[in-house]
Length: 212
Image 1 (cartoon, rainbow, N blue to C red):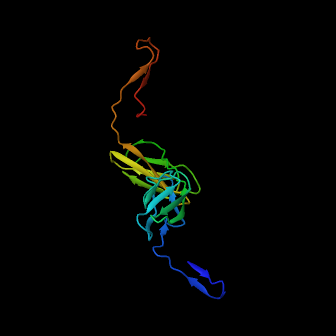
Image 2 (cartoon, rainbow, N blue to C red; image 1 turned 90 degrees about the vertical axis):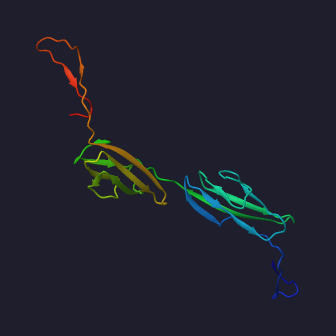
Image 3 (tube, rainbow, N blue to C red; image 1 turned 180 degrees about the vertical axis):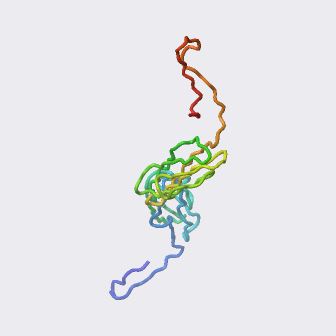
């Protein structure tokens, strides 16, 4: 510690405390995306004898009595780390964990398609989102950074439309849609009405939703 000599105002005296206790909760603040975890704290130095660690409040923590703890908070929160030694010395430090929201990734579109058919798939539109599309089993026919994508499918059996979105805080979410391609479906005819009818009557036949 440093203090001013009361008799000589221009003279300062520094007194070094033996075994001074130094602690660190991990910095003044840290930023994560919702759903992520963060490790807080560092080992304390100095002190006398065994050191005792206490984190508060206890919310979203995997432990409250370790030098390093894992936090997975749902919202922004400030933690206080208190460290005490056997001589009764106590030091505290705080850290603010800022939790940014994550975007929402959704892919919609036709999940039954076939070779050379061109389909459009859509994401949730948000002007603050950045979009990145990945296609398996087809080729992209439009820009990759829009809230929709145009795909021309190949002769593969299956395809995948995958979307990754980032928001302004660079938090991310992903979604995918599995596509059935070139599905060979044997029609099964069904009818509406009576199977016995007179000359001039009609009967509605249905081959199923996969046929036109």
